[in-house]
Amino acid sequence: MSTSLPCEDLQKLGYAQEMSRFHSCFSTLPYCSTAYGLAVPIATSLVGGGPVVMVWGWLLVSAFTQTLALSLAEICSKYPTSAGAYYWCFRLASPKYKVLLSWINGWLTMVGVWTIALSVTFGTAQLIVAGVGIYRPNWVATPWQTYVIFLGVTAVALVFCLFFNKYLPTIDEGLMPAASGWTPGWSFFIAYTYSAIGMIASMAEEVHNPSRILPRAIAWSVPIGAIWGVVFLLPIVFTLPDVATLLSVPSGQPIGVMFTLAMGSNGGGFVFGVGLFCAISISCAASRATWAFARDKAIPFHGHFSKISPHISDVPVNALFLSTTIQVLLGLIYLGSSTAFNAFVGVAVMCLGASYAMPVAISVANGRKDVRDAPFSLGRAGSVVNGIAVLWILFAIVLFSMPAVVPVTPVTMNYASVVFIGFAIISAVWYTINGRYHYSGPPVPGDMSSAQSPRSTPAPSKLD
Image (cartoon, rainbow, N blue to C red; front, side, top):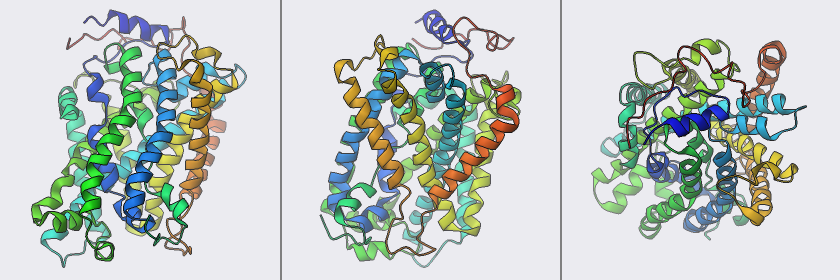
């Protein structure tokens, strides 16, 4: 398939084609992330209500998240670019506020993708610690040992993103009383939530026919994830060992012991090795989101971080190193306080959720007039679907500001809201100092001045 049509469509959005298009619909779907996303917070699920929360909570959250996925798919079908939500805000908002709203959304996205990537890579390291604990029950990893393992996971993800980029599509296709103290109805929602479905748009400029493929990938990611989640959870529910035993694991991560007790084999504890593949995928998507925001001059030293390497094909090397470096630096917080570090997981969900809700809310406020001609149209149901999606995100933001257990102590306090506000202040200060003078928003159709450069020549197709 020729890339001429996708390139022309991208130019209509104000950008020039810089990377090759060789990803497919299925390579953008996060299959393996379901098992990982359910395995890592399993302790919270056990504390928050047990098997009923694990299954019915998952299905209920999936249903609400589907409204968000459909809403994003509709907007993405009209504006398929790696810039994602902040570009959508710029195109949907009124001229008076579009630059500011785009800036706010872009930084919400940046903080979200960096911290969600951190939570995945560090979570994978904690799973490895739990796996080692199966064979060495008396070993309790110190914070610095966990951090070193995290560096190893990050290094592996970095190497794959750098040197095996063209192979990534193949790899990707590869009510109990609540012990948390919260009432069962509240614990019902604490167990799970989707967080990074909108990051699929980060690969928009590396797939064929993005107006068709990306909306399908976003819309189907939730039902497919829900089914995979049920397949993953049901065997756990029916073979669940003693909860008290699981929660007493020294590492604090019971998934390895749970698999071992359920399967009767130590090797069962390494079923979660899929986490490494999730770390690779999320690191790749985070680098693309970083590159896209730098391309629009919204990041310090944007000229450096918006470059596509001439030596390593189709990889935004500088943006990849930036997002990786930020993960490594934020990971140091774990050495000082695991409680403060855990706040970043909640911050990731809050930032990404807010960034996804903004363009949907703007579209609703405009009477959905801008998406009436979207290739992936929600039709008459759009207003209802959009409204539910925005309300769900508002609820999720409140939810992730709450502590996991009550009564609250300094150790169990959830500092996600503090970190969230802290990043907002930093973003506002940077806008005052630099952004309002240099950031004019993404390019508009017909204005290719910001996209034209020696490196902005159309890239050749590699597949199809």
